[in-house]
Image 1 (cartoon, rainbow, N blue to C red):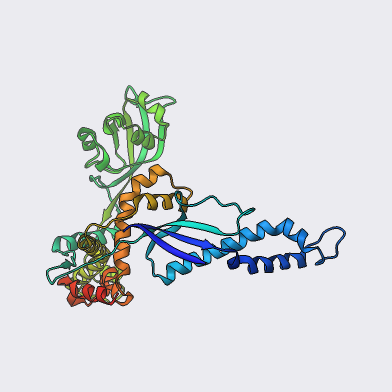
Image 2 (cartoon, one colour):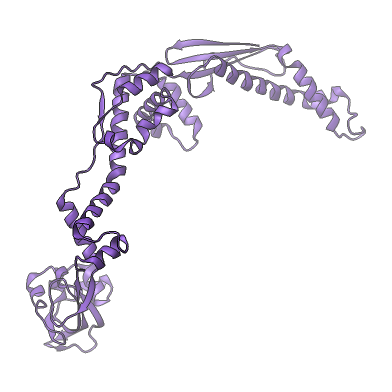
Length: 397
């Protein structure tokens, strides 16, 4: 068998396989004998069917199967042995492939299009650096986190008068001429928070009100006609809200106020475990460490993106067999469409460029760019120079 490559240009070529009868005859004969041993036909004992009948029944099928095996094995052996760096998979050629007739031919020729990876040369200097950025954890961030912990571990106390952020519970009743409306809306254990009342005049009616007092207010004005909020408060359908424009009474039965936790040992133990920190300074330092760790993935991701951009930039313009790659993408995934591939092709090529660059880097050096958190903490605080490592990697590739 003869296998050869014809380069169309730097981005693609055609692999041609020329098969003669001597390449497949023995394999076909062996397969037919195997078929004969298993064949069962009326008038013949198993395994005694004449070979002529077996060839007539199964000859073409066996021939096609054995030639397909030969083509597949030799195509990929040629690619591997000749170290062809192809992109995607070989595809049947649509221009040079001759028509094949398995009934009349003994010699066959198969042609496959292959997309070739571009030659990549990257030269870096000491000036090529990728900084590793760390989020600056300032006092304001720590202060907000302290407040968040105090709120999370705070308590809810019953109080006698209403402040803006309190939770107010009571009975709401629809009024008519200042009195409860017959058949009107009544909501037991209605709940509101003055801070969410939009109209300032209506909100002011609740601020300072005492437990067991009765407030007359207008829900439609209070929530400025917001159907979802009014419907939720009065337990009615949204469609009914437009007809509710009058006053309601609110008899306050309970006022609940959230109280932040004190900044003391009890809070320290609840947040970080008993005895882990024993002072406000240690508490804030521990928060600083936790926040720094929280932002590490973002720093790692930023580093990876910047390193990738630098490498792609240094690689320069790379040429690809666009028509062939798009054809392969269409065949490789039945869910793909030509329109979808055309839209996503620029992004696919950018990803492909970086993948090809990464393949030039030995595995023991590749981790420098993927997991910078594994780098020594001292080095991470500096501008991380990748040039020397990459130059070495490319020399070894």
